Structure formats: structure tokens, C-alpha cells
Image 1 (cartoon, rainbow, N blue to C red):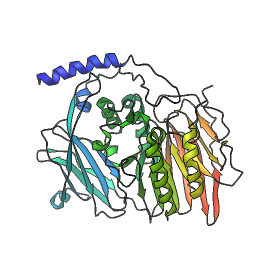
Image 2 (cartoon, rainbow, N blue to C red):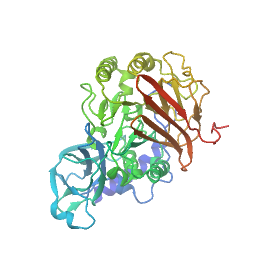
Image 3 (tube, rainbow, N blue to C red):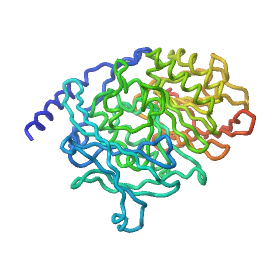
Image 4 (cartoon, rainbow, N blue to C red):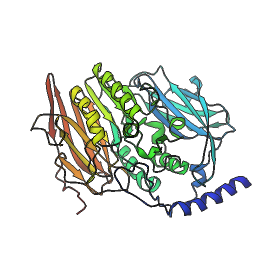
Length: 455
């Protein structure tokens, strides 16, 4: 108890020091730090979201590479809990389902982490795959160990053969996640509560190893993380000096089917008619070895891609929304592959403004001709940190100073896209329609809402 109080005091002192870090916006400084305001932070929940206990916390579902038959689950406890179990069964209107549960033993990993002079956090992270599940069925599950269980959560398996596949896409949360990003993820759930998964395009937090910020991220989503599976691609703020967050792999449970050395950051997930691919943008930018490995892997993967739809996500934009920012290396190395295999849509973050448009196979970023499709590129932001938005011609719809989330659904030959602002208003919309042997047809459905350009 005395040690906990001492750590608590050190933590509060560290918060005061950390607020003096300056914010730099240089386009090539991918390791910069940003001030995170905590003046409203100490509200009695610091212990709960920072320090683990015997009771499971930070419970999260992740998609597996075969999401119609299995789902991954992770959670955290203190180090006195050395083993974890998942109990699950089909959901039932009553309480007797508890008499017929199956059990799965979790793999347990110890993580000891410390950000600068803040408290050292020791926690056991537990990971399991629940498999043998059936499309369209609803299951209940709980995690923990004898005497310290989570509540029972419910999870609806996707049924892409009989209903549209739908997901929510978030750009950077990153800053003031507990106080300012929480409303966005909760509004998204209110808008489409039966969504199949959530996709995060990097920079979930600001400082890669700061456990209090990871605690904020889990706090903001609350039980949603445990009921709606997530996938995430790392941003530059999940890295420091090209070293991945120590929390990333213990707290998430993502596919390891990408290039060697990029497990759980570069991977793919297959639904019957949709392939979702995550690239590790920071390693593309910083490592020739991993850039080339991802190029080779992606080319080979798309060459044998039999899925009707291809969705890519990575952090740095191919075409930027921020004035005077340009990821030329990424575009030069990877856009020819996107063009070669006619990737349908690319979901990105990093630039802290909104823009979307279809771009043809030229390096200038000019728009495609009417009704002729290239790849649809989207850049978005869900957190409160904002940059100016440029007037580059590739964007057909753009926004500044606007927190957003995007709802995407795919059924047969139609991809339906809707972007909502944090207050739940529809801000942008379009359909992509497939026709055999022809380019996708873009059908704009932009609402009669004035563009928010920060003027």
C-alpha cells in the first residue's frame, strides 16, 4: 500500500513535468512529442486505469485472419494472477448458459514498462483465440481466473453471406483521448451499434510507451472494446526511434501472417468477399529492409487475391491533406502496386484533417475523369488535435477542425461510405459500385452541409 502511494505521488509529479514538452509539426520529424494536457486528469480514476489488479481490465477483442470462425481476446491483470481463462458459450435469454460453458487457457506475458520518471507498471497480459464459432451466432464470454472474473460480454459473429459487412474507421485519436476522443467512439457506436469491427489508422495515443495514455484509450472505449472487435495499424506515435510500443503486442492480438519481423503490424484479414490489409507505414518510411519486404509481400498477396473488394490501411497518407506535407517515398514505392491490382479504398491518418478523393495513375494527384475510378484515398482524424487543410486538387471533400468517424459497409457490388462529425451529423458520403471488367463507379452522395475549412 505504501509503495502504491509513493508511485502515485511520483506519477502526479511526472504529469506536471510532462506538460512542458513542446509540439513540433515538421513533416519529417516522425518521432516528435506533443504536449498532452492533464489539468482535468486527476479525477479519481487514475488508479483504475493505470494500475492493474486481480480483476481483468483492458479487455479487448481483435479480428483474427479468419474472422468468420474465430475471434481473439486479450486482457490485463496484476502479476499475482499468473494464468488466465476464457469461458464462452452461445448467448441465451436466461442465465442458464453458465451451466454449459467451454474454457480456453490463455497465454500469459509479463510486461514491465515505465515512461520517463512515471511509475513503473508491472502487469500480466493474457491472450486467447476463441475458435470454432459460427457465422451469425451471438456468444457470451468472460475472462479471468477463479475469484476474479470480468463481467459476461456478448459478441455477435459476422454473417457476410447474409448481411452487409460493416465497420467504423477512425483516424488519429492520439491526444486528450479520455476527455475528447471518448465522445467520438461512443457516438460511432450509437450510430451503428451492430457494426462488425472497428479500424484504427494509427496514432491511437501520443507517447508510445506511456501506460497512462494506453489506459485512456481503453477507458474511452470502455465495454465497446470487449464487444466489437478492433484492428489497428501502427502510426509514428506507436513508435519511438523506430522501436514499437512495448504495450502493442501484449495488449493486442493481431494476425502474424505478414513479413517476418512485422508480425501484428503488417498483416491481412479475409472475409468471403473482402480482404483487409494493414501496412506498417513507419517501417516503410524508416527501414529499407522492411520497406522492400512489405512491397514484395503486398505484390504477391494482391496477385493471388481472389476477393472482390480490397481495403488497405496504413498511417502516412499517399496524398496529404496538410499544406506542404508530402510522403513522396511512400507514393513512389507503393502506389504502382495499388494501381496494378486496382485496390478499392485506402484508409489513412497522420495529417489531422479530412480529405478524400479518387486519384488516377499519375504522380500529380489529379482527379480521375468523371465516372472512372482509380483508388479512393481517405485521410481522417478522430481526436482533437488539428492541422490546417490544404486546397490540393485531389480532394473532392475536405474538412479542418473536425473530429470524425467513418462508417463503411460492403454488400455484393456496392461499398457504401459515410463520414460523420463527432456530433453525429453526416458530413460526407459516397458509393463505389463494381461492374465486371469495368472500373468502379463513384456515386457521390455529399450532403448539403458547408465544408468546414477553418475559415
